Structures are given as structure tokens and as C-alpha cells.
Image 1 (cartoon, rainbow, N blue to C red):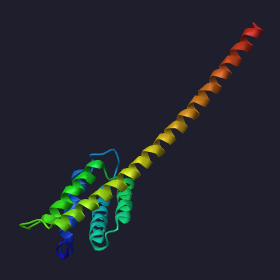
Image 2: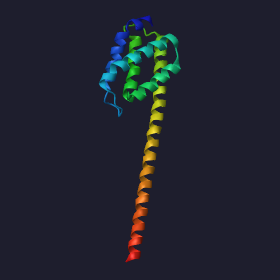
Image 3: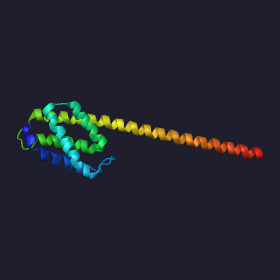
Image 4: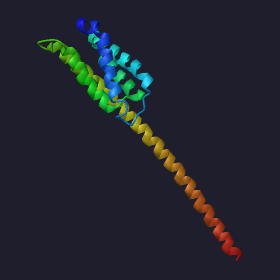
Length: 156
């Protein structure tokens, strides 16, 4: 895996390419100026995983990517880029490294999906609350209109 560390700038460029190509594929918004920072953080997370094997840190990183606005397509394409990076210029793919890349991607995807679910639940709660407020406001308006109508009828 030392070869991967030596090729860190190349990996960061590959990840940056994925982020650029998928920038507008999701409903989340990322500023193009944030792409380099995201690519660098992804590269650091990936290489740190090969050093320490900490799946929880990778899952947390996946959640951070989700909250930053990285889309589903980018996360899926990252897995392909990471697998290609492991097998780059090798006649035979180093199976332990390939398994590590797969494990990393699964943990990243797991953290991403958990964060995505949480974001969706929060959005649904905000929508439910807004609907309740609107319904309450309309109920008060209908009650007021009814009282005005009753007062009008009684004076006639």
C-alpha cells in the first residue's frame, strides 16, 4: 500500500474528477470551490483506513460527505475509482488491498446511507410541522369566517 501513499496526489485528482463529473447529478448542492477540499479529505480518509482499518471513522466520513452534499452517484463512482487505484499498473491485483478497498467503500456507503436517512427524516419532520401549522392557520380562518357569517346572519 506504500505505492498508494506515493500516488496520493494522483488519487486525489481521480476523486476530484469523480466529484466534478457528478456535481449536478443529485439534488444536493455543492459549491465547485468545495470539490478540492472534499477530494483531499476523501483521499486522507482512504489512506488512513489502510493504515488503521478504522471502519467507524470511515462511516463517519461517509456521513460527512452526505451532509456536505455529495450525491449518490459520486459515492458509487468513488468505489470504482478506489478499486482501480488499488489495481493500477499491477499484473495481478493484490487481493488484500482489493478487499481493503471494498471494505472501505462498504463502510463509506454505510455511513453515507445512515446520514442520508437521518437527513430525510429531518426533512419529513419539518414538512409535517409546516403542514400542521398551515392546517391550524386554515382552521382558524374557517372558524373566523364562520363566526363572521353567524354574526352577519343574526343581524339580518
